[in-house]
Amino acid sequence: MIKRLLGLVAATLASHAWANYPVVVLNSAAASVTLIDQQTRSVTDVYPVGKEPHHLMQTPDGKLLVANSVSNSLMFVDPKTGKVTKTLEDVEDPYQLGFSPDGKWFVTNGLRLNRVDIYSYANGGITLARRIPLSQTPSHMAFSADSKIVFVTLQDSDELAAIDLPTQRVLWKMPVGKTPAGLWLTPHDQYLLIGMTGEDDVEVVDWRNRKIVKQIKTGKGAHNFRPLNDGRHVLVTNRVESTISELDELTLTKVKDITGLRPGPDDMELTPDGRFLWVTFRFSKSVGVVDLTNDKLVSVIPVGRSPHGLYFYNRKPWMN
Image (cartoon, rainbow, N blue to C red; front, side, top):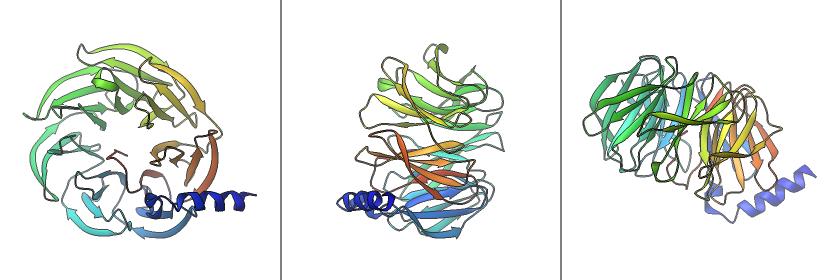
């Protein structure tokens, strides 16, 4: 029955060009990358990379960047093959990374160095603009739609910071809940959502007035976000609870929970048709596929230790 179901899924996916490209999974504790065939959901290759590859990001010109935080390097990966094309050395502690919506700025969070580095990006190259000391433990980031501000969570000082990109200056810092991680801006940049990994909720921040206006209970270890395709709903992984919650961005309420998952759901990616959600299970050395038509976990693929970011080609730029 399972083989038949996978066969039907593969036949459906084969009609979509994006399904022909591999899923790229970063195994942060194994210093490796796993490539998975989207149609058969089987591992096709595993290759070594630098130490602690945590996050990855599509560049404005459609390439893929993988950050090796402890090895202090960035790798350019061909998103259509999953293979490394070149490596940039001496990029210090690129734990999390992201591009401003206008493609002008490239930002890395130095988790262990307590620093945010801001680069200009052009023609596949980066030029350092400024290094900004920012403690303690800068973790995730989000950009305002006008590309003027990057927001950064400070994991160990339980704070949120805002940095002005044109001047590369810290605008402000404010206290939030315990161990803040993932960030998401609601439509029109009205509110900033923060996953509280040290708690069991998502905090809603009126960032213009620097006020926490609501807490949405999701599950223990609320961590990272992934929007759905409808422009209204966003998913958040609850890493300790081992669930995923769906939130309504307009009403600021929880819609439902996806349960029956493996331990440690972390980063997510959505197929362009909106049907399947891929998720890394950080604590169980595996990647799962959730069918969003019934919210059931339909596939589990073994990968390396502590899988973190994942990616597949032909989608809008998204941060993992």
